[in-house]
Length: 225
Image 1 (cartoon, rainbow, N blue to C red):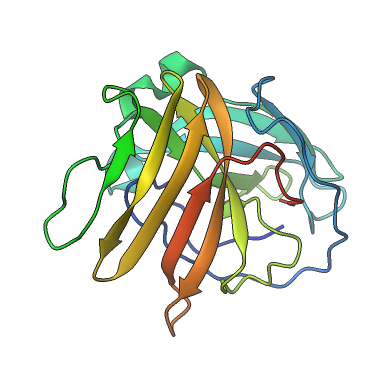
Image 2: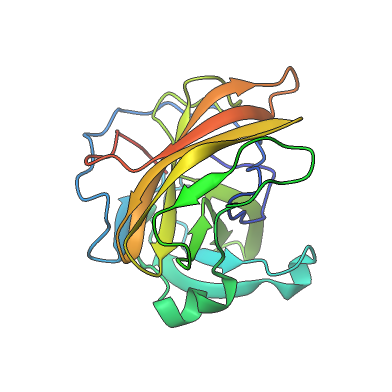
């Protein structure tokens, strides 16, 4: 289990902040097929879960900067072995939070993204909220699905699996380069839920992400929660 100090779910084209956590010993799982997430369900096991304790994993939207305004979109039980089966939110649930990519120049930045369908919108998230019901403690840290070798301190070459809900089938390409971050995109999204890989290209000296790329491969790389 990789926990960050961030609880906020960030949608593009905003920069996804890099956070730190503890190191876990992990066994590399096999690659995961079906990046389109056609079943709309994630079944997995949390690495490092405290054996015998019960909890919940949730997808939470943050419509404002105030965490008091957080909205739980979907939630599922976590059993004593850290296993869960989470149904992703419906289109109606994410509809209020769907946005377009940055398709026009942004002040102070160069470049922008091109959508094959100009009116297409998406909702994306990377972090999950995790709480332990046995100890009645809400863990206000983000659980993230990452590469098995991730140490908790983000470095070039690390990757994270994000989930994007798309209003329709469309592609997204381009680069947005701003003074403090660079985002590259090469996406082929299907209607509904998609799995997207965020690959870190470079980080700042303080460990925050400087440059990353978003892709939608046919087969996802190995990843763990």
